[in-house]
Amino acid sequence: MPRPTFLLAALVLLTAAPVSAQEMGGVRPWPVPAYGLAAPQASGFGCQRSQTTVAIGVNRAFGPGSLAGQRTATASPAQAGCRPLVSTEIVAGVNLGLGAGSTASQTVAASAPRGSLATITYARGVNLATGPASAAHQQILGQIFP
Amino acid sequence: MRVRAFLASGLTAFTLLAAASASAQQVGGVSITRGGHNYNAATGFGSYAGQSVATIGGSAGYASPYGYASPYGYGGRSITHGGGNTNLATGAYSQAQQSVTTVGGSAGYASPYGYASPYGYGGHSVTNGGFNSNAAVGAFSQAHQDVTTIGGNAGYGGNSLTFGGGNHNAAIGFGSVANQQVTTVGGQ
Image (cartoon, rainbow over all chains, first blue to last red; front, side):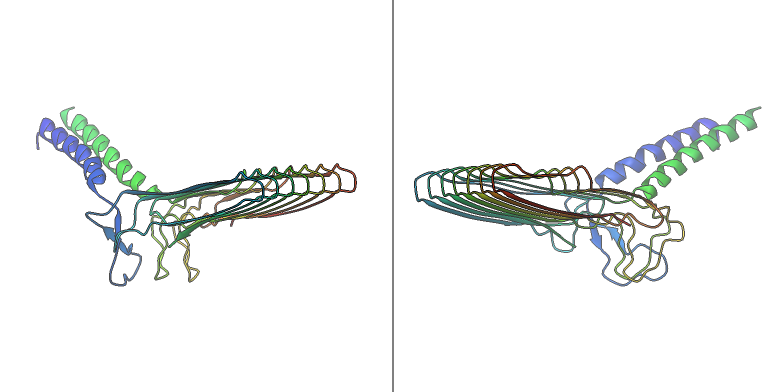
């Protein structure tokens, strides 16, 4: 093979490899058991590359003797037979009992699938009972299912 | 001379192709779980603040349901951060309770049947559950803090860094009570 033709073929191969990797979507679990050391996952088409699940709640009890309750649940299942390459989950809540004798209750929950390459989970909560004889209850739950 | 140049160019192209394929195989899993830096405070007179944060990270990277490892599994990174929490009872006769549980996910290969990759070079597991603050400042106030951080599995034969120190617990107010419990379990 002449050298320019060989270099051109190598260049085409080098450029085609990342393009094919970018066009490849998430991974689809292999339906049958794989024996030996073979990877039991194959490339899936039409699957999401990334998936982000966000659950944020803000709950306040202002008035004297007031009661504020909040329950937020977010479930983000993956596509059937698919798994995203990157899965990001954010769970955050702000719960404030401001009024005298007030009660603020908050529950923020989220459930997301795990990513094949990366799984990122953030959970953050701020809970304050500032009023006299006030009460503030807060629950932040973040879960990744396999 | 032309033959040598041809061989050199071919070797370069082959090296590039091999490096590209190897880098694709070397990509391990990454699992980042951050459940810390939460804030709980009871500032009003006779107020109560209770906070519970539970974060359970998932696994990242290859995990064979059949117990076989990838022959090119080079492990991944598992970063678990459950520290940096603040619990304050500043009001007189106030009470603040905080419970933070953070479980990191596994990165890289994790076989349920105990088989390790023959070429698995492991990964990195970083677990930080420290730098928590608990204080009962108000008169006759109570502050209770419980922080549990469990690091993830970073694959076969990797590095594991665990830090659970740097915590502060203080009962400053007259007749106040402050309890702090920090448990940090490093990854494997």
